Length: 234
Image 1 (cartoon, helix red, strand yellow):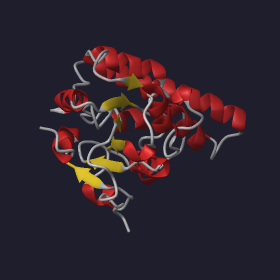
Image 2 (cartoon, rainbow, N blue to C red; image 1 turned 120 degrees about the horizontal axis):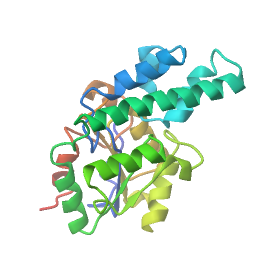
Image 3 (cartoon, rainbow, N blue to C red; image 1 turned 180 degrees about the vertical axis):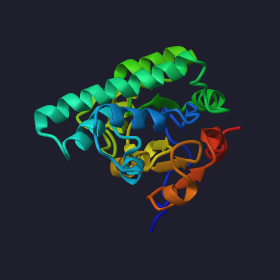
């Protein structure tokens, strides 16, 4: 069964854990070319299908995993790190040339959630430096209750640790009162693996309704802008 049971969750969560790119920040077609450039420059083989299945993962781990399929461990680690540099350079150019604008309605949705007493934590598969640059670029220093970085947890998505760390930072429990929202298969799998009460896919980023619909979830929304309505926040 693809849809998780939504009627067991309370009316509202205590915490919303949201993804960054494609969920709160517009992709504008920048991320996929950045992946392709990184793989090409570092001679790391990949297929589009394999990459699509890994969108949302911790980027250094992703590049190193793909490199390890062809190269010895030491070489794979070096190529993975080099690929990450290429990837981040591409995205920083994207930011510097006018890209990186919030998903329409995202900032208002986060503000409304917090006004209703729901905490909101931002997570990403990007490394700490790039996340910090994006938060600064968007003026989001005070928008979220917490920002969780991949270097704070033992493994990225689909492991649940980013969600658990968000709970620790915001001092929220139990996980049944947490909503996880994102635009990738791994976002949804992480939410399900954590046992989140709400596992919400959005169609504003990497995956379409058919793709996300095959992954366990409680709801699919056009974007995070519809989250307050889903949670019955006036």
